[in-house]
Image (cartoon, rainbow, N blue to C red):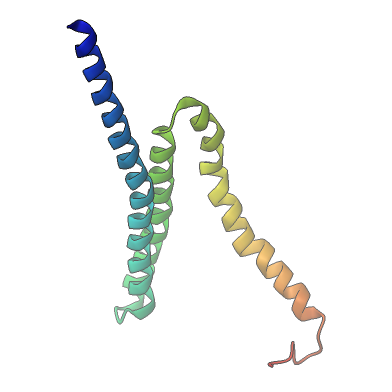
Length: 128
């Protein structure tokens, strides 16, 4: 009788494990998508706003700092939910990845673009 109860408990834990895996996958995909969508709505407000300039500037500062903080918090939370071996491997990239992306976006890409434009004359690259 106990053997049957143990097998039933094993089957339930397997089903619970599958359900937990599906739930984690949905959370792992859904939470960053929701975060990025919320940031996107803020950028739409900043782009299309008819508000006074001071309000837009204040909103941009709060939105930018809060948005980056929200992304760090969300990705850190997601990595903390992973098993220990994966957590140790991915956690450094949660903090270094966004910094490297920001450096690339604001330093490396403009540098490469400037170098490309410098290869042409005063009028810049052709507008074909």
